[in-house]
Length: 77
Image (cartoon, rainbow, N blue to C red; front, side):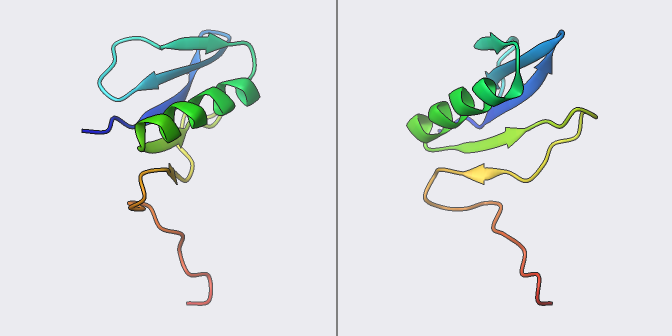
Protein backbone atom coordinates (compact mmCIF):
# COMPACT_ATOMS: atom_id res chain seq x y z
CA UNK A 1 0.00 0.00 0.00
CA UNK A 2 1.35 3.41 -0.95
CA UNK A 3 1.42 5.99 1.82
CA UNK A 4 0.61 9.58 0.95
CA UNK A 5 3.27 12.20 1.69
CA UNK A 6 2.48 15.47 3.47
CA UNK A 7 4.43 18.74 3.63
CA UNK A 8 3.30 20.35 6.89
CA UNK A 9 4.11 23.22 9.24
CA UNK A 10 6.54 21.98 11.88
CA UNK A 11 7.48 24.39 14.64
CA UNK A 12 8.92 27.49 12.97
CA UNK A 13 9.67 25.62 9.76
CA UNK A 14 8.34 22.82 7.58
CA UNK A 15 8.36 19.05 7.82
CA UNK A 16 7.68 16.08 5.57
CA UNK A 17 5.78 13.07 6.89
CA UNK A 18 3.95 10.05 5.51
CA UNK A 19 0.36 9.09 6.25
CA UNK A 20 0.02 7.45 9.64
CA UNK A 21 3.43 8.60 10.87
CA UNK A 22 3.52 10.10 14.34
CA UNK A 23 6.38 12.46 13.52
CA UNK A 24 8.03 14.10 10.55
CA UNK A 25 10.64 12.22 8.54
CA UNK A 26 12.73 15.34 7.97
CA UNK A 27 12.41 19.01 8.88
CA UNK A 28 13.40 22.13 6.91
CA UNK A 29 13.71 25.86 7.54
CA UNK A 30 11.72 26.82 4.43
CA UNK A 31 8.90 25.34 2.39
CA UNK A 32 10.74 24.99 -0.95
CA UNK A 33 13.24 22.30 0.09
CA UNK A 34 10.52 20.51 2.07
CA UNK A 35 8.37 20.43 -1.09
CA UNK A 36 11.25 19.04 -3.19
CA UNK A 37 12.01 16.35 -0.60
CA UNK A 38 8.31 15.46 -0.30
CA UNK A 39 7.96 15.26 -4.07
CA UNK A 40 10.91 12.89 -4.33
CA UNK A 41 9.39 10.71 -1.56
CA UNK A 42 5.99 10.67 -3.27
CA UNK A 43 7.56 9.71 -6.61
CA UNK A 44 9.58 6.92 -4.98
CA UNK A 45 6.46 5.66 -3.13
CA UNK A 46 4.18 6.21 -6.15
CA UNK A 47 1.73 8.07 -3.93
CA UNK A 48 0.01 11.42 -3.44
CA UNK A 49 1.72 14.61 -2.26
CA UNK A 50 -0.33 17.02 -0.14
CA UNK A 51 1.07 20.45 0.78
CA UNK A 52 -0.19 22.52 3.70
CA UNK A 53 -0.58 26.29 3.33
CA UNK A 54 0.47 28.83 5.95
CA UNK A 55 -3.11 28.94 7.26
CA UNK A 56 -3.12 25.18 7.89
CA UNK A 57 -5.29 24.15 4.94
CA UNK A 58 -4.10 21.68 2.33
CA UNK A 59 -3.92 22.82 -1.27
CA UNK A 60 -4.50 20.66 -4.36
CA UNK A 61 -2.79 17.28 -4.27
CA UNK A 62 -0.19 16.01 -6.71
CA UNK A 63 -0.43 12.39 -7.79
CA UNK A 64 2.64 10.34 -8.63
CA UNK A 65 0.85 6.98 -8.51
CA UNK A 66 -0.13 6.66 -12.14
CA UNK A 67 -3.79 6.79 -11.09
CA UNK A 68 -4.77 10.35 -10.24
CA UNK A 69 -7.17 10.40 -7.28
CA UNK A 70 -7.31 14.19 -7.50
CA UNK A 71 -7.70 15.01 -11.19
CA UNK A 72 -7.73 18.68 -12.21
CA UNK A 73 -11.14 20.27 -12.39
CA UNK A 74 -12.38 21.37 -15.78
CA UNK A 75 -12.49 25.17 -15.67
CA UNK A 76 -14.76 25.38 -18.74
CA UNK A 77 -17.82 24.10 -16.86
